[in-house]
Image (cartoon, rainbow, N blue to C red; front, side, top):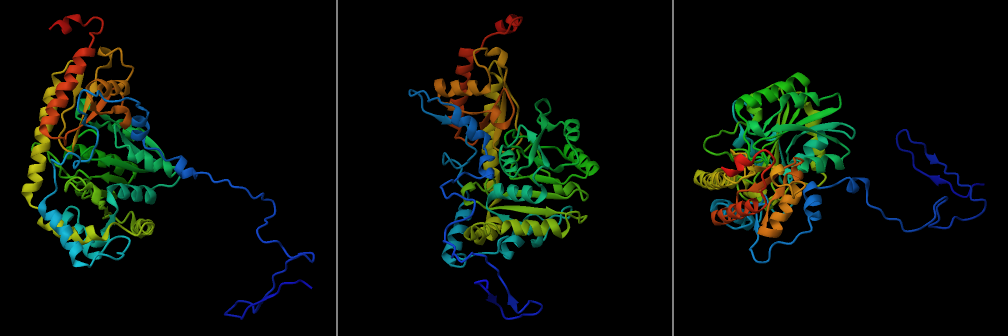
Length: 454
């Protein structure tokens, strides 16, 4: 007789007795031994971790160069507006956090998509007749980066592809490739203030395209798309039936001669997931509170995408509850003067930097219209001792102690990015050093001596 019989009380349609036959040939199995497996330690990183790579880290970490010890280091490479202390958040924002902490109401878990009251505040803040929003259309996230991650995860499967701008924010590739999603790069046109090459964009779309990523205002370009250009982008998405992930973390951070148009306000046909957060406009990137706004007036996403976002949000149980508790006061009480002063400072620095570098032989800055950056083209033929933009920026660090990210970090050769959040005196000094560096290394290309003599 077989040695093991497990009896179960019947419930419903289940049998009352479950026989488990184990042929042990009279031997009792030894715990810990598994047939066909030799016990040994073999711990390896997962495929997902192996496929995860941040292009900025990969390039910067390979730049084995030390700054000039005789010159103080000026970093124009870090997209964190708080680094130098010259751009503090508003007192109302800080007070809102203090009040949330002192209230004792926000020490526990919140729903994974955020408190209903907090989502209502975000919906009310961004609601407009052209793009109405309710609390059910808002998912709160741990920063805008997680908002982007959730959107990619809900829209694309391994083996599908997404369309990403070049130059563009490298996190899109980092996240997508870790999930087995292919990245296709569409070109931006520097001669048109970084507008999208729409023909190139549309040529990349195929049956495996899951979504189009539109970053406006742009990191790294500092560009702001016009209403007309956004409508042309939406026309492509409508023709090809491709949903849009709108990275609008720099929304409303545009200079006085430009206007930010939220993409969802211009179309009721294209389903759009818009990503934003507190990080940049409120100058608190470390507080890690972002959001996804679901715009789906034709019910193309339906309940499936909404439910998918909810399920994905449950992986980390939502963003910091203290910041959620402060959100109502932050959105309602931050004075307009704070926003105005931030943008005024950024525009002054942008104009200063653009003007100074435009006068430097061999450099071609592209004037920004918003965000916190500008891109500077390098006429590499005038700097023959450098093979590419990575070598150019390496030597700039070694000789002048000025850090800029090479265009290769954004998949765009022969450019470098400048962050314009540094104090004015640092910006002036950095531009002076860049000019000195270029003058030392600039060489006239053949047949251009007359231009060089001017």
